[in-house]
Structures are given as C-alpha cells and as structure tokens.
Amino acid sequence: MTALLEARDVTVRFGGVTAIDGVSFAMEPGELLGLIGPNGAGKTTMMRAITGVVTPDQGTVVLAGRDLKGLGTAARIRRGLGLSQQLVRPFRDMTVLDNVALAAGHAKTAGPWGALARVDRSAERDRARDLLDRVGIADVADAWPGNLPLGFLKRLEVARALALDPQLLLLDEPLAGLNQIEAGQLADTIVDLNRQGLSIVLIEHNLGEVLRICTRIVVLDNGRRIGMGEPRAVMADPVVRAAYLGEGGGHAAA
Amino acid sequence: MLDAYHISLLTVMGISVTFALSLNLITGFCGQISLGHAAFLGIGAYGAALLSKAGLPVPLGLAAGALLAGAIGAVVGLTSLRVRHDFLAITTMGVGFLFLGIVRQQDALGGEMGVSGFPGTGLDKEGFMVLVLAVAAATAAFSLYLKKSWLGFAFDAVAEDEDTARLLGVDVARFKLAAFAMGCAIAGLAGGLYAHNVRFIDPDSFGFVESITVLSMVVIGGIGSVWGVIVAAAGLSVLPLWIQFIEDYKLLIYGGLLFAVMRFSPGGLAGAVAAVARRGRTEP
Image (tube, rainbow over all chains, first blue to last red; front, side, top):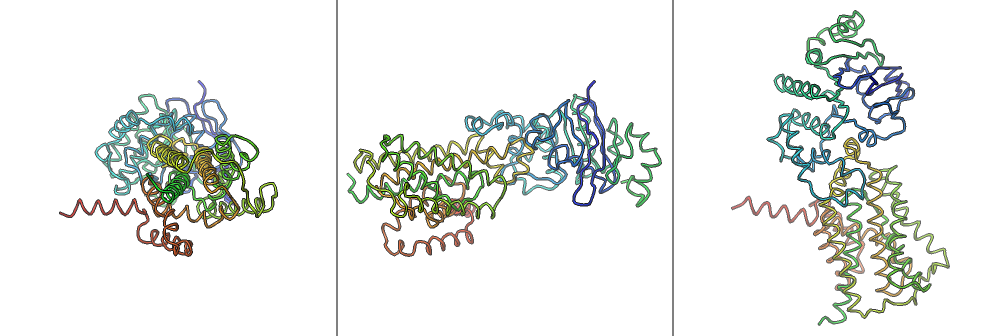
C-alpha cells in the first residue's frame, strides 16, 4: 500500500532556530495519526510545512505519491488537504453557515471565471448545515462568528475543513478551549469520521484523548522525532517519558 | 424633454457612476485599495480617442480602450500579490503618476497639449446620454450580480483574510488579478465615454485629484455597497457643476468628507442608512 502522506527528512529553520530537524514519517490511508510533543516541539511548524504556509529548507512532503514542492497553499488544499487551525480564523463578516458553505463550494471557487458564472448557494448551505450538525453547533448556523465563544469557533474550524471534502484532514489542536464534555464529544466525532474512512492527522495537547482515539502516534521534541508507533508502546518509552515528564510532570495528566 | 444642461449633467453623472463602480469592484468587493485608478480612466480615454483618430470605428475604439486598461490593470494587480494595504496604496499611487509622466512626455500621445479633433460617436447629445446611462446601468447590474455570485462570495473571503481564503482552496492571486482586470477594464470604458463626451483630453484630467475623487465616492457611498456608491458618485459628480464654490475647493471638500465618513460612519452612506433603519425598528 502506498503512503497517503509522507514527510521525508523535513527541516525548517527560522533564522538561526531550527524548528524541525530532519523529521520523517509516513501514514497509510485510513489512519488516525496523533502528532504530539511538548510546547515548542515543532508540531504546528510541521503542519505548516505540509500545508505550504512555510517552505522546508530541506526535505519534501508527498501526498498520495505526488511531491507537493512548489505548490501554494490553495493548490495543496485542492489536492485533498483540509486544515483546522489552532488559532481560529473565522470570516467575521459572514455567518457561521456561510463560513462553511464557502468551503463546501470549493468546486465552484476553483477559478474566478467559473465562480462568476455560478450563483446558487443552496446545495452548499444544506451541506454546511449537515456539517455544523455533525460537530454539534447547528443551532448557531445563522449567528455571526464575532459573537461566539471559542469552543464554538474551534468546532467551526473543523466543520470548515470537513467541507473541503479532504482526503486527509489535518486537525491542529481542535479540542483546546473545549470543556471536558465538549472535548469528549468532538473526539468521538473525530473517531467516527476516521471509521468512515477519512484519514486524519491530529495535533493535540489533550494527551488522554489522543491515547484514547489515535491508532498510531508520532512524538516530536525540540524539532526531532523521538518516538513513533502504537500509542501505549510509544508512551512507555523512557525517552518519550523523559521529554514529557522530565520537566513539569503534570503535562501527561492534563 | 430634457434641456441641454440636464442632458450634460446626466451624462457626467453616468460616467462617474460607471467609474466609481469600477473602483468599488476592486476596493469594495475584493478589498484591494487603489490610489491611482484615474490612470485607467486615462488609458481608456487615450485608447478610444487615438484609435478613433486613426480611423477605427468608435465602438471598436471604446472596446479596445477598455481591453487595454484591463490588461494593464492585471499587470498592476500583480503588485497586489507582493504588497498589501498601505504599501499597495503607495504603489498604485505611483502607477497613477507613472501614467501621467509617460503621457506628458510622448508627442504621439499629444504630450501636454492632449488629444482633440478625433471623430465623434455620430450620436446627438441625447443619444450619447442614453448610451452612457445604459453603460452605467449595465455596470450596476453586473456589480449586483457579481456580489451574489460565487466570485463575490470568494472576494468577501479574500477581502477579509487572504491566508484563511487560501486554506479554503481559494487561489487568492488569480482572484485579485481578476478583480483588477475587470475593474480597470470598466474604468477604461468609462474613460472612452469621457473622451467622447468632452471631445478633448489632456493629462490633467486623469491626475491624482481624480483618483482621490473616485475613492471618495466609493468610501462616502459605503465601501462595497453598490447602491451607496451609485448615490455618492451621482451626487458628488454633479455638485461641482451646480455650485462653482465646490469646484474651486473640490480637493478640500472631498478630503473633508472622506475624513468625516471615516471618523463618524466607516460604512459610508450605506452604513449610515442601515444604522438609522435599525434604530427605527428597535425604537417604538
């Protein structure tokens, strides 16, 4: 089976700081892969290297057998990536529903002239409503994002990424800002999506949920990969335990 | 029937509305500021005038002027891919001055003397007014349609947050270039109509003051609001013709209005009307 996503020796430097240092990993279609590590480990930078927001100094990212080098973010999204961002960025001049509908209309926004020829939004709005229902915020569909608490906006990010019909869903800390019940529900939704065949990379600080739902994990620390494999086995590794528990041992319990 | 004075007022009004709506497409819909939009009015005017002087039929001259302005607009739009906001404002202002600089120095373009004596449209004053108003109405209808289309939807996203628009698969660069190409082409068409209305063009008609004037119309009407921009452009274009005082102090008055709108009603006329309507509903 060919890998759906493959990072090969990816290195990203910001000035003199090496944010990711020669990280490689691969995931098969259908996996729910956890990408974890302490603060500053390079998880979000890795995500940005995949989406093309930052350009690696070395190494490549390959999606479904195609090297993504040289492609912009929009082109990568159109190759089948969907990203839910850690820091929420809703369009505040659009309703929650239209935020998702715009993403659901990705086939209509492929180019300006095709977009000019199309007006009807009803199918995309129906789909947006389904997705909002799926992440549990259908009742705020007609609200303006500026008035909503963070927990709703995090779920809006996830709904918007799903609306892109991705082959691979990238979730950057989707559970942060949710209370325990909401986090558990969204984690269950993520598992459901994965069971229906969607491949997912999950960056998450909520280690309890990661260990509960992920089929495999990759652990980063200081920009290096220090562990990879089945969650329980990886977390039993002394090197991983030291990175997590060495300083401020409360981390793993959080 | 209308007298000659009102025919000329309505003609000026129609050209201004078309010109202001063309900038609204770029600045209002797609969020890209331009302080040099008069250059595209000028490109269309010079294109239409010189081509009809060279013997091309008037409709073809108008179309060629619009296409030329649209093509150059797309090239200028390339700068919007590199710079944003205040730097884009400065860059487009530079484009405006560059246009003036080139036109003033080229004898083939009439230099300081401008271009005159080109063949007319063959329409009488009233017929030309009808043509101008039809173009303005078509531009307004196109604007309203665009706003409802998926292109307008994507423009909303690009105007608010380019990075997030990219994450939703919107190829921001192509959408911005499309906005510049369409907006500048319509400005070029307005310029061609201007040339045939005045029957004489010189570089001074397309200077920085004109760029600021058209931006005032868009901001005062309400950035992005088609109806607001139509009202503001119609009003502000005929005021100087009615009242000599306003013509003399045009830059001061428009600058003051621009400041007042930014300070007290950032949504422009359209925003102020919406606010009053909301107050009317909530107060018994």
